[in-house]
Length: 325
Ligand code: PEP
Ligand code: MG
Image (cartoon, rainbow, N blue to C red; front, side, top):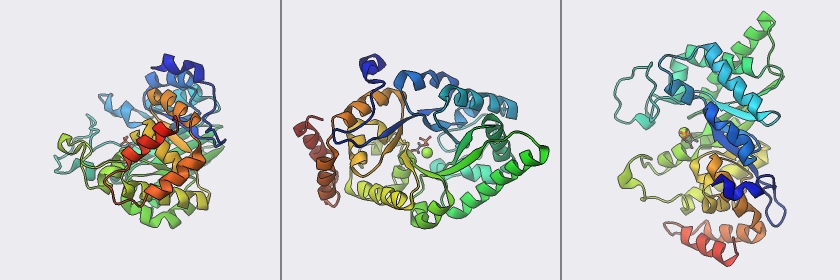
């Protein structure tokens, strides 16, 4: 797949009418890092730090965590790497953290909820991240944040770790940029406060959509029940993106949705200009972007976003076909 798109690797992700889209890559393990150069990604928009914990028989020590984060930063060079703190629990069990069985693990004790109940886990991870980014800019984001109050608790813990480095006179990052994942719909009702307290936002549509539709992302019986190209989804994303742009806060979408060309086409029409996607999606999505005239598409989307239909997928497909996208 990569070979087919190799010739386009260094071409910009720019639409026919000159709008630039930043294409970043999702990663999580050292084996993913060579894809940065192979795909021409402009950075890592989502580094899933939990993967190291999931494949490790014991809790990775601070120095072991530091090693992986440093390798990612080194591979990226002057491109940014956005590290997401542990998103364990839910569909991502770790061997060394026994849990009670839960009826609703996706809505259960996971991600930042575990981190805030076990703050040492988060503290040590933040310590490893701060060590790895010494002398550089660290981008860190917190998963499954449901309310601004949770973000504030995370930022306090982060500040304690920064203060610790100061106290010990150790090297630290030149800047620490803090972001959150928008995965829990409640947070979108606090956007005006939230956007004053973060440096960037990342929309995690994999989880967000299961909560948006109250529809389990892993239940095969429901796999085709709702469509991401449904007007309520698109209207919701549009309003989030608009709020971010108005507040001047960079917004990225890092769910699998962004890696599918038709979905990505809808997303750029809604105003998204940053997508973090799997390496194999980079070629097809860039090719789509380079064949789109955004002015036409934007108008088409705005006409369709209020449609009462189950989905506007078919209309978008027709639009794409008619416009040689
Ligand atoms: C998401 O929920 O969209 C996301 C990117 O996180 P994950 O798939 O790791 O839960
Ligand atoms: Mg998620």
